[in-house]
Amino acid sequence: MAAVAVTTALGIAALPSPASAQVIVRWYGYTAAGAKACNSAANAAGPEYYCTTVTVGGQKFYALARP
Image (cartoon, rainbow, N blue to C red; front, top):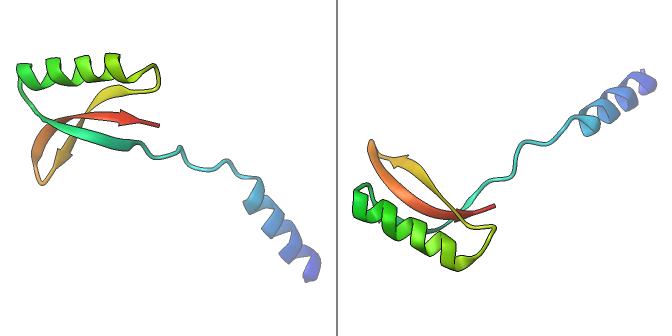
């Protein structure tokens, strides 16, 4: 019985973890101006920053994010 519990625990620990969550740094309106501002901010912030879209309460936004 103890061997089964150890094997199960090791099996769970060996599973890959879910992808890390993104960190939203700043929100922009879901408009052409918002997309342009987000893209400019991502370019200025550095290579790990990117723009994405998020939906909150049924409303879409552009968001400057990083991993």
